[in-house]
Image 1 (cartoon, rainbow, N blue to C red):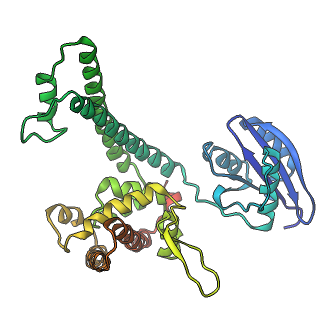
Image 2 (tube, rainbow, N blue to C red):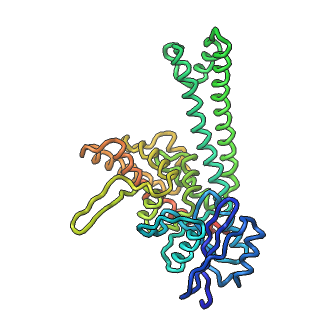
Image 3 (cartoon, one colour):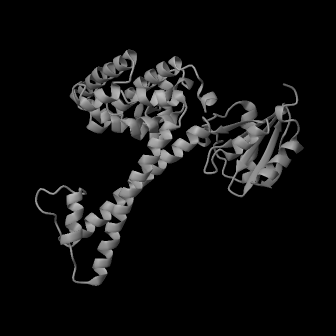
Length: 377
């Protein structure tokens, strides 16, 4: 298209630096505007017809609000991966104006990599799932504080009492006391945080159950199918769906593995091939889920009562893929351990291969359910 303008936006909480690159022309800065909807609207009207504009900005803490706003105005916008923006060696000057100009220039040259932007349903589900993860981490910290406080003062639970069970908490409330009021207040505060975090997690998990019922048909079908895999219960399946979105957007399972950052880094030159640890240049939440699930495959293939209950609504094809995953991934675990790999390395490798089965099941189900995700939402 003639007269296309490539616009780079360096977005911050309060301001947006703007630069524009003409086709075959110069790259120039247009200054800084407030990060407000009305200011963005005026900018688009000033730049020309929406269909002639190509806008990009880096993914960051401001989220996708600007993307959705520009899309409503009819402007094609892409959110790009900041870690994949080319950087000149020796460039030691960084300003908002220069960053916006660099985005516009690289966008015109086609050197930027766009990230997947979730729709409203995915964004809401992902926020809820991540809130539950934050609550679990807060619970762990609260338990550590109370546990170390008791240990520091020599208070140990009776023999046979498992930590953080109801029996354990009743022991803390009824049997643990201190002579000094300051320590009693400290104990009460730590105990309150442990109980509060547990209630917070229960509340969020109930909300996740309710959110699943309101999801589009295709999303629910994929979640139920992923539960057929060993090590992936409902919360893990929902988390994968929230982080990845439509699995068929990946043409090959290796692309999904790369998206998770679970592929090895490489520094090869000429005849020398050097590969190292995983790159971690991807979605850390997805990587954590599959690595945690991969621990289940150290056990021999079997379908217990819990897994059989999760598979009762799955099709024969999905169940067959889940069984194939058990056999293949357990063999992979055994082979790598026999070669002397550490457990963590082995489980990470198994988790990477597990993503291939997640992709296969997700694509199969999405093809069976013909309603596109964005239409269903």
